Amino acid sequence: MIAFVSGEVVSRREDYVVLQTSGGVGYHLAVSAETLSHVPAAGESVSLHCHLVARDDSMALYGFASEEERDLFLMLLGVQGVGPKVALALLSGGPPRELASALASGDVARLQAVPGIGKRTAERILVELREKVAALGGEQGEITVTRGDDPRRIARDGLVELGFTMQEAEGFVAAAEGESAEDLLQSALKAARQ
Image (cartoon, rainbow, N blue to C red; front, side, top):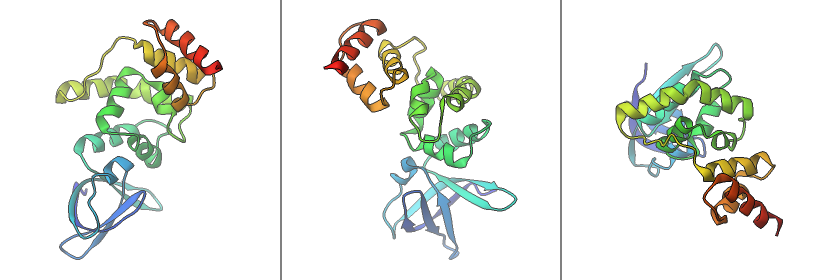
């Protein structure tokens, strides 16, 4: 198995990079937007952690800026209905630590904000990975998750359930006043009506 690839960046595209190794071989690696942000300009050197997905009709190499991101990718692939493209889309939403925190805290709305992920898939991902990600954070000491119910998150999720987009909901909740989820939700709905 290919664990990592080091080489010169030949090209950077929206969803992949091509690296030329010292042996003259060019590797096409599919990457998340998060990993792409860590890849330097063409002509510079970089090392990426990798995972090879071999299927009957194709072989695809996926690259990651960190081992943590690759570990999350592998966990996501273990969930029924989540393929490499959906896993990369989830990882593209921000740093691996942010996604791990969302998984450990049960943030369904964060997962549903990713194109291609519906409510059932988001819930399945949470059910299967919540404890695994919490354990991962405990071992590495990098992921801090608060287990309590965050009133702002509850209010935001309520607005999303009512049909607001994630961005609209976050904007209304950020401007809302109150301590409890109910107060925040009422304040946000009042602002939304104006």
